[in-house]
Amino acid sequence: MKRLQIDINPSKRTVSFKIEKGKYSVPNVLQASIYFSLIFALIVFIFAFYLMYLYIDIYAFLFIVLPIGYVVLKKSEVYHEVPITKDDHPRLFRLLESISTETGVPIPNQVVLTPFDEISVSGFINKKLNIGLISLRILKEKEFRAILAHEFAHFYGYDTILGGFFAYLVRSIESTRNFFLRVLEHSPHFAITLYALLGAAVFWIYSGIFSAIFFLHSRQVEKRADFIARQIAGDNPFYHGLLEYSAYSIYFTQHGYRWIWELANQQQQFTNVYDSFNLHYLMKINSDELKKQILENEKRGIFDSHPPLRDRLSQIPHSDQREKGLFSDSIFRNIHKLEEEFTPILTKYVHQLFWSAIVADAQKREGRCRYCRQQFQYLNELLEHEATHSETKEE
Ligand SMILES: [Zn+2]
Ligand SMILES: [Zn+2]
Image (cartoon, rainbow, N blue to C red; front, side, top):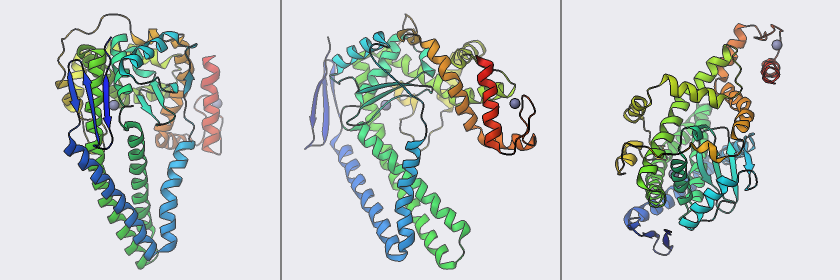
């Protein structure tokens, strides 16, 4: 059995992995420049707050409270996930155990299933593995294993804690900058306009600096995780796993939500939206052509946490043959029942996504229920009422 030998040296800020076939280490210069930029960014951040405080105390207070409040708000949002144990899904846990043995990374404290597409890890002390249901139907078991190995690899170094910290800062910076812009819009006084301009400018520059660091850091981390996944699962399963997973989730994000939304608007009720979408994907779409298109049209922004897919894929030796065997949904027990339970949650999420369209639509209908034409005064009452229609119809 292959086992990674990991040599983490915090004093040198290097993490190197000795593996049968070779050695992967993070270049010192890159690592050092990331830490340097991080410290620099923090100084700018603190300095910006200090400047605000000097000039406008009360606003300075708001600027600090606002980003924190934003994050707290985000956290308290109801997020649908189902924690699972070995008893629920013994085959999955056997798979996780095998990856754990090979990587030397313990199984995360919490394993949860979500209605979405993301397969990811988070947390530092309380480690968590999120498995989105959406892509399970398209991945072969070995490909799924390769994707999981990539996620396990993120527990080397400080990927999840740094990643979480970066994500927090990005959100804070954005919300603070937007706050300044809003102040600018509604400014009642010239002096306030001036301060808001200054604030917006500072945070604009800061977000520029920050996105560059984020970019450097996450790309390096992803490259390392890809490398480890290939050692554990093999080049070919990882290549096809990454390609299938990405193509499917990109397609789901770009077209799937709209597809669900439009069908829901035509009063179609889904028993199992995952099954319906998968059929739609397999029947209507030439998947090879689609994958080619997705790779070619992949739009990248500087806030993206992952390197371009085509770059990642181009480095992996592979054959055109996918792995044989079952699809990864068969690893889970009663997965189709769970899909059915997640179906109203996912469709409700799609509702939220198309919120503004709903509002406009409801206004056009003058607050009447689309099913029974009952009229409501408040939008939330109307929507809650409409949701009960779809719940009862599914039973
Ligand atoms: Zn990753
Ligand atoms: Zn009704």
